[in-house]
Image 1: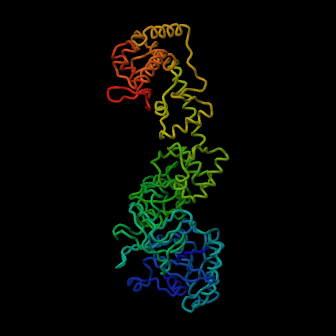
Image 2 (image 1 turned 90 degrees about the vertical axis):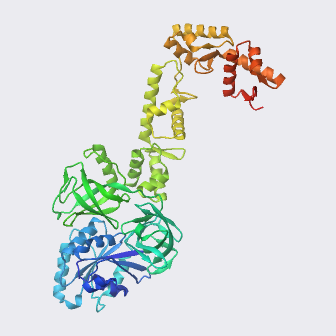
Length: 627
């Protein structure tokens, strides 16, 4: 890989800092207290060139038990760990604790470095090596190379560098295509420059002038300067130790534990859903509402735990938890984290983030447990399908999917294509919905329209907004149209002005036909003397329904209560056209005269013509629309 970040781990005073100085020539114990006490308190950083010509960053993490918090901050973004063991002492308590943490965080690549070998007899070294192999049998370190080194004499250093170079080619390259993300492990102010932060760029690329956002605070900033291994650069890539000079940010506005990323690509949350693995050495099971310390990225957060699907998670077992945080955090699905007891502080579990922005759950919910199991398995197309299916919105875009799941855009597009081929997802005008969602919507539409036709058999159909309201969908107007058009294409519905089931038509009984003919006759006889629905219905609701069914067929509703026979209205339009073509315009009184009706009725007909864009009012007269 092009960029490699190496971390050291091991018991206090086993020679981590001395080894780094021997490899790099850089002293990583920088504070006076560290030098006086002879141990690392804060994170130390250095770099050196590998035989293959590439440059490796190296993080010296504290080994003393009181500084485990700083050690875990240093693990964010590591590719390779040098497990440092004093050849004269062998494996010690902090060695085991460091290994537990590293294994729980999913770090896969190790080199075991046996130090101080010039002071140890060969027979004893061989015994220590046998002890190490036995201790790590069945763990992720079983196949790890074991190298002998003496940092003071330089013995074994060249071979160690060669081995690091060899192993580095086998390490999985971090993605540079995802949005840039960096956990801040140090923040300080430099006179004349302002705020500077350091960390390992774990995803993406950044360049001078890029806008970033500080999470979880949401403060925006811009990159003023970038340094990688002490050299100014214009671009930094995933896998590099990076120092950033940030514009417009005060020291009080950023701290260790914050995350820098592209604006609007992450969301802060008070809760996390995780799959936890409890160490066999944990003192107790994890129980409901226990207060623990969560180590996520470079941040430590106090939290309460809620076991899901069980009363407690037993020692040496696995289970789902919801973490209720005491301050906001940001994470992505798949991120690893560590849980420690509140007091005394002891590592008890590792966890993987399954949902970085969950809602509160009922603890014993079979659907929830099934959802978390899908997320845990992590198969790409299943995760995309699950996200689209569970999204409260009907439609989802590629951008939303990629952002929510932390995928590269090209990877997300490939997974979506697979799901479209298998018809687990459907694409409608560039938007995606799950096939089961469409099936549910289709069933609901048929149900509501069937009920509507049963109650109102003489109505042509239901209005779009009324149907949308009954469906209870979180959906916008245009998206409603897209769904309805799909159902029209499937011949589920017919949609003109109103919506009805495909094949539905108003059918009249013989008695209704008699009433219909009587109403039409009355309206024809009335001509331009308008009648009201109340006059025609004579207080009978079933007749009002029948009149509604005739709208735009044989009669027109000019307003809420007034109706006219369709033939009479068309004749009124013809008379108006003839008059305006001869005179250029028409006044209300003139229209009343040519219809031989009352001023009130003439005004009602003209107002309707205005709405239908037959006429247009200009002052006190009307002209033809468009003239």
